[in-house]
Length: 180
Image (cartoon, rainbow, N blue to C red; front, side, top):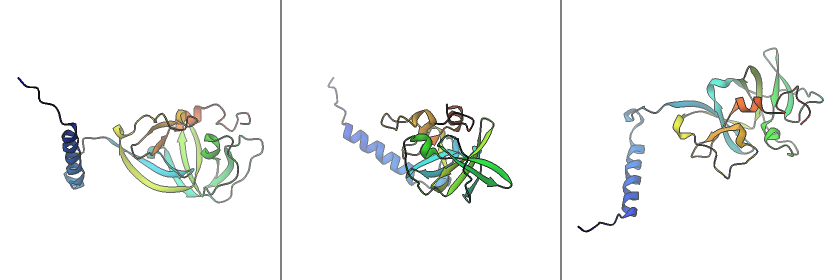
């Protein structure tokens, strides 16, 4: 019996054709067997990031930032929202301790994690997206090693999902921590 050699180019073409056909179907015909999670996508350091929407309390433009002396560098200050004071956290400075200068970051994403309420200072809000749970993969080897402990995963499009619980648990995150 003669063994037939597999033509991998043909197999790849068939897989790509099938995938294209699946993607071309109208959304209402697709089976919704995948569990998807809503995420708030935002831009930070010119890179797309996201957080799970259930952690987001609100999003607003940043008005006045009231500086607080002797706090870690990543604490930009306090903002006021509906009569309450909320710590404003700059992930830019948290992820890059040696980062210098100012950058436009006009939005505050007020979140809750581990019983703490704070605002993330971000450059731009992209909106709410729905990502299948299995589309969030571990960060690739070339991902910034300083950020990996605070990232749940990365989508195939390069969207990094921030782990707010790890952020809150990290040494030096809290305002009552020593200067960082």
